[in-house]
Length: 378
Picture: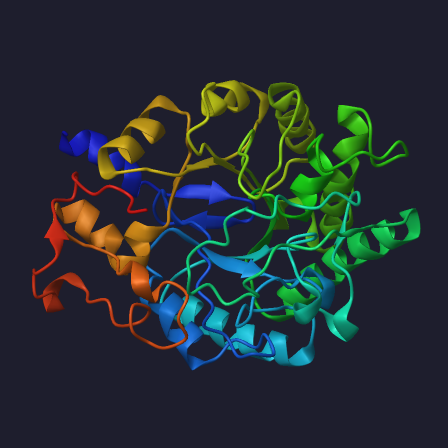
């Protein structure tokens, strides 16, 4: 890899109203380190501060209202306490020269009455139960270890209430000092439940045709854009990914329509995950979205450079590599070895495997790989 090619990763990039110092982004990664009531704490502050050298930090999934919560120790952004906690995070990131977006994640049917107010039934586009054998991440992911229940289909007025919650959460993100918000419309969560044909069997304004199935996501984006403009709002999608038991009869048609509609709205960026899909997800959607695109999943340093050089990605999202290397930007730029992540601590609640990864100068060089040899662990 030539220095000229590598240099492309370290050019500035305009995203919405902010300028990123490099083309690297910290993709959202579930970590379960907040307080039980969803308030970010000192561990969260240090975790994100350590990684402020990355061009853009996108937080782990944040529930926008109590019915969107699916995991213990996950953060929220729907109370004054949440705003105060996140303000400490964003202040620390900004003081260190970084930029940070909040990812808003409503799990929809992928919750459990034990997680919800008054033991409520989880909600979704339609009353379609997830496969009882659907994976629950790892054995230490803090959620009830039992099959997902059958959800309750939202009524039309309730759908508009949820859209209002996304807007209110965006307002709180402004108060908390975030540089923008990202709608998590991937991984089988609520917006993807509306988009997918097997989880959306409605025959009203929010189901049936591609246009009506996309109505929930686009309505959320429009409502959120009223707060500080579309340049404050981003979206993540994972086309055709069957994670959490979602399927689409015409994924190419669905996501082509979504990409074109989001392009019209001039959102901050579109994050696109290709999780082993057979068709060319990036190549299909890139020409349809006229704005910054962030491809994500399985990127190494050479692949990141190639993506930016080809124009497929304006910047590139990396997850586990940045989790284990808070100074990944410096390691990439200097060709330094990379630490390996410790999977057993992904969803635990302490500092181990969270804020104790070393910067290069403090590395003991025990579990390291070359900067171009890193592969995503499973």
